[in-house]
Image (cartoon, rainbow, N blue to C red; front, side):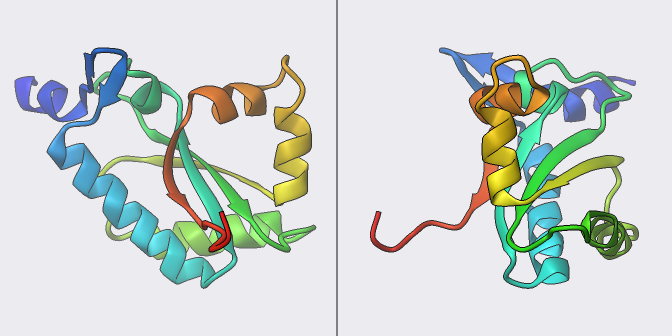
Amino acid sequence: MYNILKRQYNYFIRGVIRINEEVQRELDLLVQKIRETTVSSVQKIILFGSHAYGTPNEDSDFDLCIVVEGVGERKREVINRINWGIYDVMETPVDILVYGPEEFQERASRTVTMEHKIALEGKVLYEVRDVLE
């Protein structure tokens, strides 16, 4: 039980949530597999929930918000493709939300939404940066 808890717990130091190395390796692999599965359409991957907020327990999963360019009505297809791509490599269960960029921005702009909390408190694992920024 100690190893499970040690693996799952994040450490909160000076206001910054630090994820232990084993969990970070698993998240890095997850991001890699998602990018391979969805090709170049992923704009942003945000970790939210207990792992991002520093409160995981031994039953915690990874909660991901994935912003995909041009997803439109294909959300279920994108989620299924990602799930097939990560199925055999992930030890920790993964819950996925998929949004188009405009949809996520619109929902995140409303302070009473879960998307607002994700945008403010989530941990960005991957983001496409504009070269002109």
